[in-house]
Image (cartoon, rainbow, N blue to C red; front, top):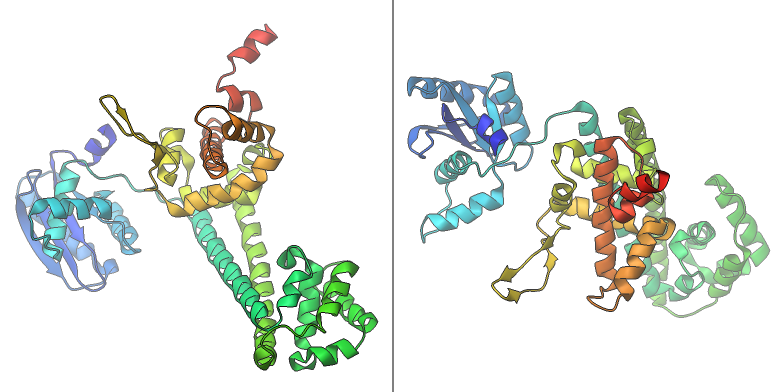
Length: 432
């Protein structure tokens, strides 16, 4: 609160801005929400410098020493406004859109939504210090954020492509999906499917007449082309036997297998681009000198840590580790009133991208990290208040974020004793 009060002093007027594409609503108010001036600017966000200069003049004419600019962090325009405010030495804060929506309902029963009223609401919430300081601009951390967004986009594309391939094969050639336990994780299965779909225009009978030996040679060439060494003969035999399976909608087989071939090409290209982006992300970690710290947590790869840090930004901006967990929406929400104690659930109000990144990191750390494995076993097997596997994995995800915050802010490697007991007291007494 003291940091916010320094940015929103009573000596400053408040400039509430409702941003849009070509229409920007600007109001200048005092701390009692009295509108001193208002004006609509028909311009883009980068042309808002004239609006800020106008607001500063109106605030000075009303006797204020300066102004504090406030807006909602929607889209990209708020970053532009923040840069323009910084260039003029003006304080800048943001108001959550959810907070504005709740305040709009509390205004009156009409629930009106206009640019003029929203700008006043933003200024009023800022005067009440119901705002927050946006993440400071840093070139390196900003690059990591953009790379993380690119990685997430590629992951979504790859998952979509796999689902489409699976759906097409289930329709026209379901036997192919039964030839490997995890077909899309098998390089041999993917290579042979590309060979089959690329030959004979989807005519499986003609491909079967080619013979297993010649088909195996083609698969070996395909694997060598993609950087592999040798195929799985078991999977090749299973797929060759599936060529004679007649199950599926044969009228659509030719077109569907041609589409599968195109999707396989897109999927492999997306995988190549994903590997390139992940390499860039780990290079940014090296530049920040964080690689050794984050990988000191057993089971946590540099890519997984970079994915989480791309969503949080610099963890030092969070005052505590719990605030970082709250930012992810993984903190428990308590419900108590008198003698009543409700069921504890997650808030789910934080950053969904950070939740997903922490959740993905659970699978590797749970197997490779003895502390997390013991914690998971205890939570799922204790006599009282036993958790389900999903609930226990959520606890581990929150623990990963807390300990990631700890190792980065303290610049100390991960310590299994501290991770287990939360203190080094026992270790010190033992050494004594």
